[in-house]
Length: 73
Image 1 (cartoon, rainbow, N blue to C red):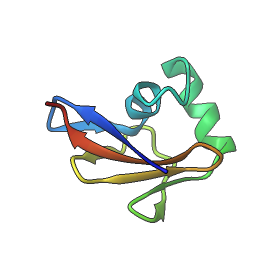
Image 2 (cartoon, helix red, strand yellow; image 1 turned 60 degrees about the vertical axis):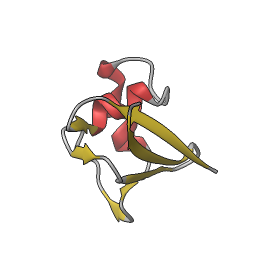
Image 3 (cartoon, rainbow, N blue to C red; image 1 turned 30 degrees about the vertical axis):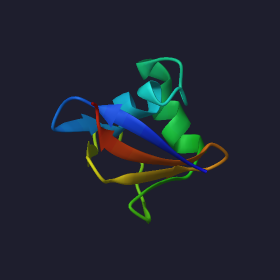
Image 4 (cartoon, one colour; image 1 turned 45 degrees about the horizontal axis):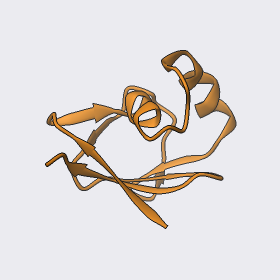
C-alpha cells in the first residue's frame, strides 16, 4: 500500500518525514532507526536523515511500507 504524506514546504528532510509519517516517535530516534532499517528514496538506498525529499518522491521503508510526498492541500 502506498500512503501519501502531505507537506506545505518546498521539501522536507528525511528525518522529519519519518516523524511526520509516524514511523519514529522523535527526531532523536531517526539516526538509530536509519542504521537498523533499509530506507529507499526513489528506489535507491539512502540513510541520510538530512536527505531532501520533494513532492513526487517515493520513500520505501522496510517493514513499514511505501510513502509518496505530496503537496498539502
